[in-house]
Image (cartoon, rainbow, N blue to C red; front, side, top):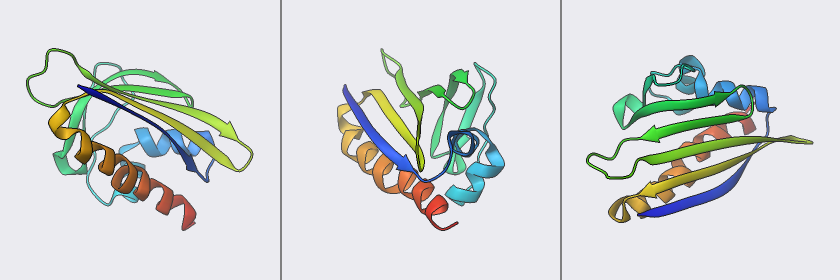
Length: 127
């Protein structure tokens, strides 16, 4: 099992970034795909038409999101934590993804950088 941690800059305030990560309509705007999301702990979520599925664990409005991502049968849950930090010209998103199966690590790393946060950055930079 591996861990991936990285900071991403989003040129938008934390309130907007939080909505972009938690509101299904906003997720659809920047991802281009259907999303099912709620800010209720223990609720299930689905992103990119089911390519990413899991369970929401914890929310701290405009500051923190904790989710469990499903990878099939795993002894330890794969946990994704987003922490939002206010910057002068936007938001720094601290991403920590733990317990990534070794066989999925390279694909997950590329997905975080080029797809997930790449699309989110492009969305806000295009405004």
